[in-house]
Length: 92
Image (cartoon, rainbow, N blue to C red; front, top):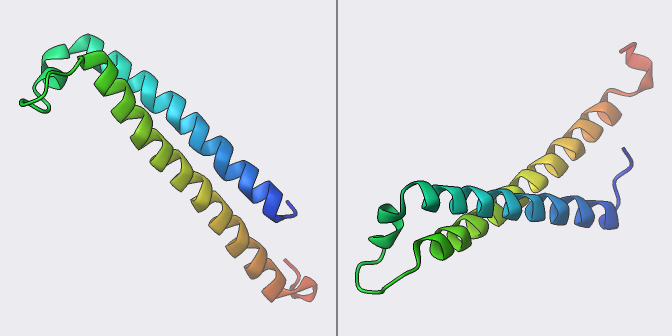
């Protein structure tokens, strides 16, 4: 895959958005299953458990999804660098 700045930007952005959706869905389901856990998350503020868990899950999902996208780019760059370093005459 030929890497360019727009492709890298799109890859990381899409992976962060997918992580946001998956993290938000996970947080929503977790709050539906056990609302008492998220109601006591911050005891001095009255929180709606489903909303708080969805937002927290989405925030963590963006970070983890974006990190996975960056990891993908780094592995691709290292793979390209190693294959160029070996050269076409190595027989592999």
